[in-house]
Length: 428
Ligand code: CMC
Image: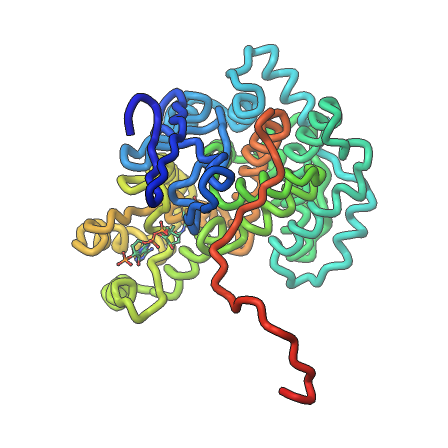
C-alpha cells in the first residue's frame, strides 16, 4: 500500500484501489469496482473488516475504549447532557441552543400520544407475550396508522416520521408493559420530561398520584443516552439494509427491533440478569467461570466481551457508577448484586478473560439498574430499543440523503452443488 492506493495482485494481474480517509479512524479501501475488474468478491462474514457506509454520527475506537457522538465523548454527554439533547445532536449534527432544545422538546412531547386504535391493536396479543414480540408488531404496524409520513422521498414526511418514532416509542414501550401486567394504559403528560413521562406511563395507575423520582429519572435518562447510538451494529445495519430498498421508516425500525432482540445484541442485558439469577450465590461463580472457559460448552458469560471494544466499554464505566447511585438511593439489598460484584471481580482477574480482552460491557450493569428500578427482565431490551430508536432514525435519515446510497445486496461464496438434472420422484 502506498500513496493512498492499495494494490491487489491476482495471478499475473494487478489492480489499484483508492484509499479513502475519514476524519479519524482506519482508512478504507474502495473496492466497489473489484468484481467488475477482477471477477472476485471479498469474503468477510460478520463484516469485521468491512465499512458498509460513510457516516458522520458515531465514532468508536474499540482499542482505546472511545465512543464519540458527532465528536462528543459519551462520558461527557452522559454526565452533562440529556437524552433529548443527544437525540437532537444525533439527528441534526450539532448540540442545540437553549431555544432549539425547547422547540425540539416541545415537538417530541406533542407527538407522544398514539392513535387510539392502537390500544385495540394491542389486545390482539396474548398477555404473556414477550414485550419485544409486541414491540416488533406494534412498531411495524405504525405504518398502517400514519400513512401521511411514509413517503421517504419527502423530507418533511421523513422529519415527521422521525419525530413520531422517537416520541411514540416510550408510549408504546409503556403500553407493552402495562398490557403484560394487566393494568390500564396511561396517557402521556405534557409537563413531564421525555424520561419522566415514560416512567409515569410505566408505573402510575389511575387510582393514585405518581411522582417521578428525580434520581431514577436521571439514571434512566443516562441509560437512554448510553444506548442512543453505536455505529453500524447489527440492528442499525438491519435498519439501513431494510431502508436501502425504500421501505418506510416504521417498517425499518421494526426490523431493527427484531434484530436487537437477539441475546448476542440487545437481549444481552436480559440474558446477563437471568444468568446472575441462575448463578444465585457467589460460591457458585467458579462453576460458571469454568463453563465459560470450556470450549465444549456453549455457555458464555453474558454481559462480558464486545465485538468492537477490546479494551473496555466506555459506556460500562458510566453505567457502573449509575448502578451504585441507584442501588444506594433505593437501598436495594438483592443478593444478585453481590453475585454481580463478585463475578466482575473474579472475571477481571482471570487470565482467560484478561488475555481475550473480555471486560464487562454496558449490558452487565444496565440490567442491574433496571432490575433495581423494578423493570422485569423481559422489558430490558424494550428499553434498549426505545433509546436506540434515536440512533436508528438518525442513521436511516443519513442513509436516505447519502448520494452513494444504493440497495444493500451482499454477494456470497457459493458452496452448494453445481448444476445437475432434475430426477422425477419415482426414480429417487
Ligand atoms: N464469555 C466467555 N468467552 C467469551 C465471551 C464471553 N462472554 N465472549 C467472547 N468469548 C471468547 C470466545 O469464546 C472466543 O474465544 P476463542 O478465541 O478461544 O474462540 C473469544 O472470546 C472471542 O470471541 P468472539 O465470539 O470471536 O468475539 P465476537 O467479537 O464475535 O463476539 C460478543 C462479541 C459480544 C458477541 C461476545 O463477546 C458475546 O457473546 N458476549 C456475551 C453477549 C453480550 O454480552 N453481548 C452484549 C454486547 S454489548 C451490547 C451491544 O452493543 O449490542
